Image (tube, rainbow over all chains, first blue to last red; front, top):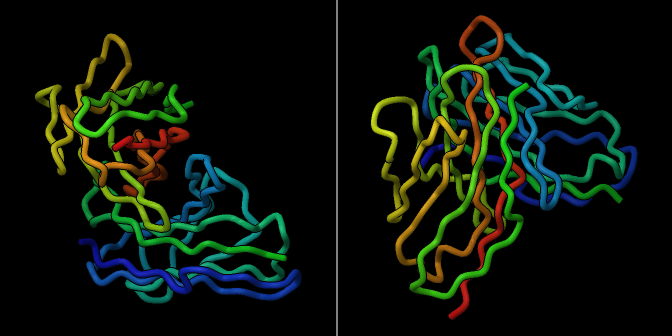
Length: 114
Length: 117
């Protein structure tokens, strides 16, 4: 089992609230990723990080922001949640070598904005 | 642009029957291919991966997949399914992004597998 954790697992929140989705990994991976998955749909990359103090936007435009202050921690923040943000958010990490290596996924956070 | 197509949105098979899930990809270079499984309420677990070499790859839980470059396919198979195999299955192609070796996975839409007892 991969050691990557996400909290909360489920979150129901009202419009306009600020939320932070937590993601932590204990594998020492430099590279971390956030994917968004709408019900019945494929995953889309929204953010990724090469390492500490590095963040990049992914393919799918997102109003969320991320930070990477520590290697093991990659939180995602929505300053003002809207119903259109309702989705599942999956965090992943990969090892430090250059190239295509498998990504390890957390259990996901299912967000519902009312 | 890279893309992955899983033609079957939902498949139902009987327990003990064989299974094949289809995956077609579009990618200009040598593809790095993955199959992941997602159980309800869970994250994704890697079943198997193809980087190079033998085109028939073995994975966990008795799954295998065959890479066919001429058909741009990477179909997943299992000779005899178990009720616990009911889940969502995603095919993905790995793509390097940027210059520092990060990678993204481009996923198909997924195939939901239902097992009849």
